Length: 405
Image 1 (cartoon, rainbow, N blue to C red):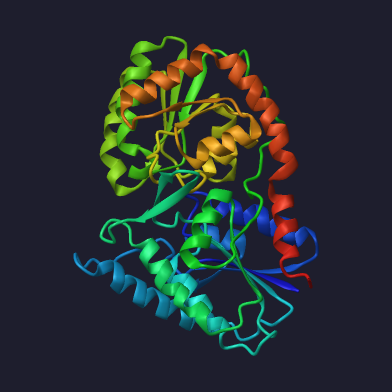
Image 2: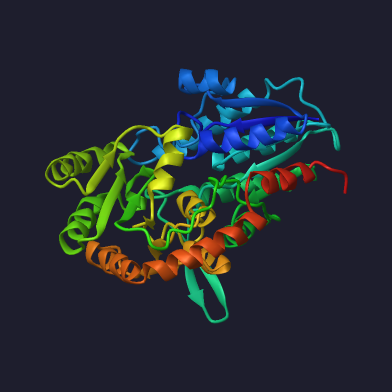
C-alpha cells in the first residue's frame, strides 16, 4: 500500500497544514509505508524541498471567488472543480491497494473526487479518506430537543450550497471506498445532514509538545493570541483587547503572533506602536516553522481565542486542540464546538458571550483570577487528550479505513 497525501491548501508554514503533513507523513513512513505528498502547485520552494512534495494541484484549496461581484463564488467552484478533476486524472499509477488522504477538501475538491472515482470499475478504486476540515457553511439554530441549520447567503459563504450541489454526484456511482471524515462530532453531524451521506470522525492529528508542563504558579502570566489571524478569528479585536489587558492587569504579558490576512496588516501597525512603548506586549511577526511554533506554545500560559461564535459553532479549532493537548487554559466564545471539546476533556477555561473587547477582556480577567486551578485542570485534561488524540492515533484510524471490512 502507498499513501497519497493530498493537500491543495498547503502553501507555506502559515496555519497548520505543514505541521499536519510533517507529523502524519512521518508517522506513516515510520511504519514502513511509502508516501507521496501532493500539494498546491504554488507551494513555497523551501517547504517543497523540505517535505519532498510534488507541486501538483493548480486550484488553491482556499480559493473562493474569481472576483466577479455577482457570481464569483460560482465561477470559482466550476473552474476549480474542473481543474482539480483534470489533475486527479494524472494519477495513473494509483490502484486498489492504495489510500489517498485528501486533506481539508472543499466543495470543488469533493465534486472532483466524486467524478474521478466514477472512472474506476467497482472495487478497483483506491480507498479515499476525504477530510471535511472546513466548516460546512451552515448556522446552527436551537430547536426543542435537537439542532436545526440555516444556509448562509452565498455572497458571504457559499459552501453549504456548493457542498449540496456537489453531493448530487453520489446518485450514480460506487463510493464504497470513499470515507468522508471530520475531527469533531458536531461537524460530522452537520455534514451528514448536508450531504445525506455517512461522515465519520477521526482523532485530532495535532501533535502535543513534550514534556507536558503544569502551568500553575507561573507569573507573570503570558496570554497569547496565536495562529493565522483573520476576521473570523477576531483579528480586528486584537489591538483593543491587548491595550485593555495591559492597562488593567499588572501581572501579565500579551504575546501576539502577528501573521495573517492582508486585512490584519493595519492592525499589525497599531500593535507595533503599542509594543514600542510597552515591553509587556510581545509581537512575533515571523511565519512559524516547527521550531518557532513549539517555542510559542511553550511560552503561552493562557490561550485567547476571540473567535466568531457563529463560525465556530460547528467546527473545532487547531489552536484550541493544541492548547488542550499541551495543558494550556483557554478563553473561548460560548455556544461553540470549542466549548464542547473543552468540556469533554475537562480542560480549564472560561467563555465570553459577546464578540467585543470588553467581554473578551472580562473573561480573560476571570481566567487570571482563577489561573492556578484552570492550569491544574488543563494539565489533567492534556493527559486524557493524549489517550484519545495525536498523530499516532490519527494514523491508526486513517490506515484502518483501507483495511478489509
